[in-house]
Length: 385
Image (cartoon, one colour):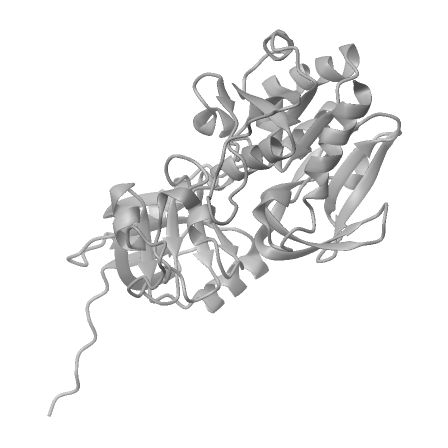
């Protein structure tokens, strides 16, 4: 008897150094190029794929059970997936969750996102950790026909995220109001009926759950595009300004974002709160610099120390750039640091209600270790009044 033959691979992941990973494709067909990162979260794959901060990146999931709860519209962080693709250990199983509306493969296919399963993600993750986030090409062809030489060429031609302004690609096209609060049993999402503070949120790639947390803290939120000017912000007579998360190189986005933030800091006494890219924008506006990390921080298990209290928060992170703490000017205090590598995770002005954090307090990994940051923002606006 002849030995059974293995099914022909229908997808491949090609690294710029020529390494090739074959597997089985699902989701959309075709090919795309991006930077490859890994995420260590055990849940939240739908939120990760729709997080605008992942623009220009393909995500390798280190946890093998991806897709087992299916997908549903409530868990989207934005209208469509933003991450360029997905790499997983095992092919998704049939969904086994009462909230499922559509399988992960169907969901990805409808949104034009390629995924590959059957990959040795541990080996791939080690390669990323040792050599940094590589440029890659991912391809899915049901017939298993691949031009590997062409894919390597395309991976090597990818410009990378350094110097790339991606906030303009994921920001809103025009301003809008937001009043939906955080999900709560048994009614799910609900409107904020009695907002107290007028907040302008600058959208560099804002996640919906951040806006929900602001609404739950009593904020009447007006979302403005990333390119909003000082006059655009002040036209809404806000009680506070929020700077959202987002993708790409902060130095590139800062070309137009930093002047607006500096005007807010110089001409008003408004409380300012930033998260992720918003944290980096605030740091640049205060005179610090940002740097590209080797492989970044991506996951829901990152310990961060609050230098003010000594407490350790378990946080969700998604960033490939970081604020260089050595460049923080006088009067800017480092409030949070990563216990993984000591990188900066938070700053504040010593004498004013202006602060930001690198991690995502809305993502509930702790699960509520960092929600106090939204309450602090509301308190600052209350005290100013």
